[in-house]
Image (cartoon, rainbow, N blue to C red; front, side, top):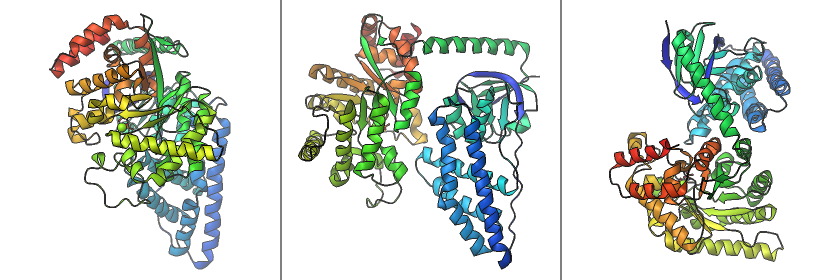
Length: 577
Ligand code: PEP
Ligand code: MG
């Protein structure tokens, strides 16, 4: 009998194959009290286990395919770096000495301490780093037990792996052996398995609690990475249906892949610019994997978050130069730091008491203008990077023209400083602003007249327009890009750009959602900056759209007041494809 169970689909695609249940229970760790004479030999045993764990990871790196992308190898490198981090070995050795205990127990204590640090982080991505600590601790514990944690049997081919959780090393090794898909009991959309599976293009479902009790060895499974559904022992009819879906999926992928490197031109000949969004220079590889294009939004705050402090000018410069070089002549739009609301660094910087409502507080450009001595190194570095390829400066969260004038003055000062020192930079570097505060959209004409481009940040524009905190799950249901007020603000911004003859782009999530592409084209948007994995899907819609047919349709949608009616008319535009 077929059984349907569901988890969270985190990597799209259909996989059909036999279940491979991965049993990897760790023996319980007990505290043992050592005599003074046993302490040094225990430390030696621990150091040997560290070496063995490190050797295993190096072996995995050697074994995996030569063409494995660097951004995938980064996951293994993160674990190797952790193994070298004094926080691991010095902390554990100090525990062995202080508590006269066995290495396993000392390591467990140290691991829990480190995991707690990550667990308390606000940023959801950094919180998932806790998994790295857990995986590294497990690997050393296994090495202490004298075992090898590398799952490199030959029997994974074509199978669907069912596990409690997978380490990045497991995931990569299994991909190397051509597994069909993954199911894990733990993890969410940001877990390593999820990120890696998406990168590797392997269907995956995570967070399927008790999967290893519900699924039996060698049972045939269908996993639907789109919906998160797993079918256990599918009947003939379901198998036939999913095989057909899989075939369609493969042909759709091939169709999209054929668009890579082709221009995004509508059927009536309008050239649309399609760029990608990145958080760090290494994300450029993900963009290049889909299309040879530029970056319309580089969120530089990740640099601050990962360093946990304001970087110095040289660190900024080296990072931006790396991104410019990786883009090989394609434009890089560097957004100056936007810290203070949903993204924050830990408490190394004292900004006084936590704001009551940080989204409306001292964030982004407000914070940079309050502390120009910290902002200046970033501006100088962006200018210096512009000597190596096309760079644009983008200012987040501008609200008033007073702020705009202050920013322009600071940029001018930075230019003068570099000129005096004879340091090269692009004298005509374009400066633009994000339109993400309703006031800025309403006054977009004023900003457009002084800037080289505008970019609509719908994530914030929607939160401020509809008065809903974008990270508050309780009010998430109100988040609607199709609210007529939001659409009017977007239209005003596009029109202001047109009047001032400057480009207007959209880099918020709305631009990455294929549901809105035709609506935005009809509104006159000519520049999209989207998530890497949405590049080809958005391009597919662009090249199958005729602007002059969309314009009157969209004009009539813009007259509507009812959100459900707007939703259904927008859906009809998509269905025209
Ligand atoms: C936005 O607000 O739409 C945006 C792109 O910026 P962020 O999501 O980084 O706030
Ligand atoms: Mg924003």
